[in-house]
Length: 523
Image (cartoon, rainbow, N blue to C red; front, side, top):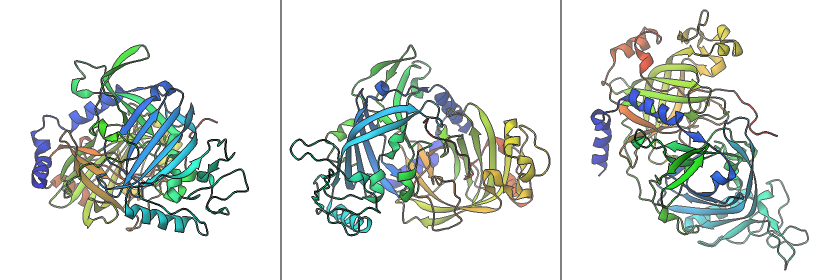
């Protein structure tokens, strides 16, 4: 089975009628036809993960969120030991209510103001029980708590008023520096049970601070039925450092949730009627009991055969919320060289171009990564890079003339950056090494996907081989093959200029640090 999947991945791009330009053009059309409408009545419904999600940590999760028209919600997160979501770890359930206010950083999005009524955690196996006991001992020194039991709900927050005891309890609010009361402590207006500190688990739902609801067209039948869409819920990104999540206001998005519907539904937005269709790769009936996590089929591990061309399938966001991008990659097997392109934009649909970074170098696969399952470590050596400015204001706003390349800048004219050691304003340093991770998968449509490491939330480039990413960026799809060796790329890396030749139309991506931050929510 693994051999068949691997051969299919290696030949998929050759037999497909689409090349990279066509795939990119289709993605641009899909982005441009997306309709954003973030309101409570649009949020109403049930939203589920499209597949097993890898979050920073790493953490592996499936989400199942339900909202009503008033903003009341029931959120379920099933956490797993593995990246196929086949081995359940624990389940977190939360009930509460959310209200919206405007977002200043993400167009069309809203900032969520939410309050929990109750939260429970359910260990799903004996190892989870031991893990939660261990975590509680570390996070809550000196506190007494009720022992964890498999399949048993453990309340960690309940603000509902109890008529009999006249008490409430809310352990989610306790901080690691407070004096912890023991179990069933009385003598205040707060009733404590189980654990009052849970480390990173306390911030599992901070994603509700940023939301966006959108209708995304189904491109398979776009020419015949352009009003057929799937509904997506984008929630805020999770900080790559678990210890900083409680202070973090999301500024970009995770992978989207899709609305769970049994039949096709019509919806009217801005006087246009859309047909919402069920597109889930995961069967919706597996979420029948929120206390019982689904067991997905374990995915076959694929070796990191990354040779070929890969491209973005949608406009991507980065922490900071001010820039959006698409990426293109090409890898050559004979000399382990790569060349690539990041196209940056000013809007979330990648319509308004800002600048382009083209880069090239060599890479070295380092074997299996022991933190991320079915993932390999990879080192990217960034040896050449060029910058093409497409917005004249950027030249003056960032002072590019002083530190980024030699000579005066012109709009739409690429400039080689090696002479100045990169471009400090954009976090490009030459030469440099990026310690990254890489994983290959096949989706349910048969497309081969390439995952590279998620950029650090605080835009810190750590020159440390032990600090590789623990989650992934949006996947790239394989869109074409390349020869095993490129003479032109060899000339660029050894004696040439990356701005010369025909490399503008093909390529890979550069791991980039953009240190631009703005307020997230309206006050």
